[in-house]
Length: 396
Image: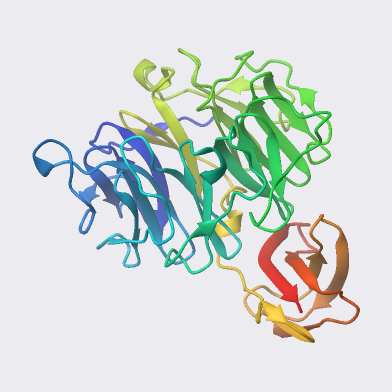
């Protein structure tokens, strides 16, 4: 069994982590962003442009850090900031977002297809915001969410976005343009984490750890998850063909499943008792051949053997153009290799068109018999069966 290895960030209050262009970035509350270009062997502050606050104006109140394909984002108690020079400097990127404070701030960032998502820490219907221009402006991504739903986590699975919320599991077929409840008859109250790949979902809910093999229509109970009633703040990540969980339970720490959520095993080797304690473990991150866990006192890494599933959506992928079309649009597959298929899905997730065995060139996709409306554009790799989102197009 692989072990966790401490990264000696040298800061307490670690909240969040991301990787970008070969560097690691950690959001450490009160002292800002810590950066390593040596795989954690050494760390330096990367705070130029971030706002100072707190006693004597010497603290940097950061709560989260995330990335898109081309920029890094930081959630502070003074708003969202963005760096386009690898953390060398930061500038406010808050246009369209609600004002942040010490009780209201962006808690998580996600990148799905061409969009960046900012998720606040408890705003009901105003929880989720999204940007299609890399943070220059933000718009609502919460249509269909209700006032009593706080979004705890999101994932994209087979072209569908899922959101774990206070009351229900929600899904979106149009990259957050609208949301609907997943299977009301089977939906448990209180979803705290959701992850999935290859048609399978794993969730931490108020009624225990569960898994689904049909997109959340029906659920089965995990047999030995160590916490009967997981709490808000529980986390999941899919990586290396496995799922890992932060239990948020005293002395339980991190668990993992090798069989898609059916059974679980402890995965704490290398973590001290302080870093296993209920409130210490904050979130996961994965990049390349490493899985990371953020703890209040330090961050830790564990080796894997493949690129993580959860990071697949923010790899640089071709974007269809023009996004609003009349007779055709184009997808440049030059960087992806030949033999792939382009699929179009309608607003309720039905496949309405497929263009297969395409060359590794810019490909013209004809409208043909498509009726006017929005379609989700997907690319299918026939070798692996992996289906990835390229964004939405609109037929006029």
